[in-house]
Image 1 (tube, helix red, strand yellow):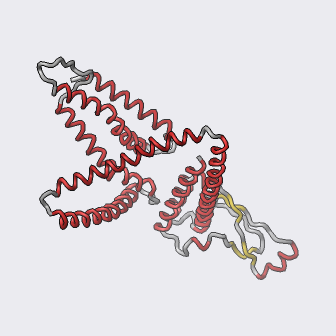
Image 2 (image 1 turned 120 degrees about the horizontal axis):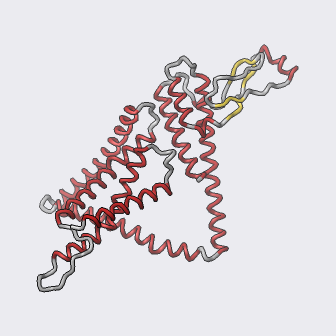
Image 3 (image 1 turned 60 degrees about the horizontal axis):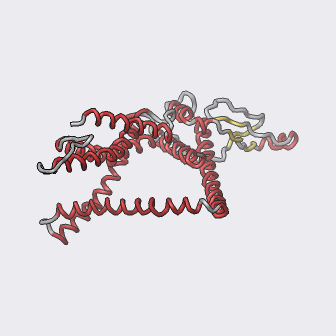
Length: 331
């Protein structure tokens, strides 16, 4: 068996996948486990490019008759190795697709503040999703059994699985073989390309403005929470963690509007309106003018009267989602 060739091919795949992840990803912002799962998820599909030619050449060589002149392939492997490789590739991809990657996505998007609570939230979210999918699949299976019976059930399920894969192949190959050359052809027409970019620019601008508004909204809400929760409150570490983990939100400032008390109305008329002091996220110092009857933030209505850990987790998740969408449309 060509062990050296397989090792060299695997090392080349490792270098290729690592280079692509380094080019398209951002190691400074992603946790190490995210990069690891992404690397494994990319490595297995790329390994098919090497494994399929090896499988075909090795199978043809083993089927060669004795009287025929057959040369051993450059990367010949045994049938046992191929079976083990394909099973490892299939079940690893299956586990990544339906278990690991959904759990990791829900874990990173969770607004909880501890590892165990994030994990429980991710498991609960995926269990709900899997139960919905499982219920639909069970209903479909019952329908198949009712129509076809149980004699050819396994073959029918395999045919459905292969049909799903073939449909995806046809869709994506058709898109790549038709749309990509068409796009390249249209790029040769400068006026048409300029009109397309102008139309797309307006859409991107609207999306970007919406995401910026959402970021400002959650930033103001977090500022109100920072102001209302005292430093001695047990929930204060969670708020500090949100502020620390969201540097883009932390830098947003806004003017806090205030309502004057009746006793200071005449005083305000004589001296003029006093502007509200700007408050930065995470700051504990606010300036109050003499005679001010208190503060009323524009986002006070979005903050509940009693701030709980559940509300803070929801706010943290909304901050993550707003920043993620902002990064997407500002890229």
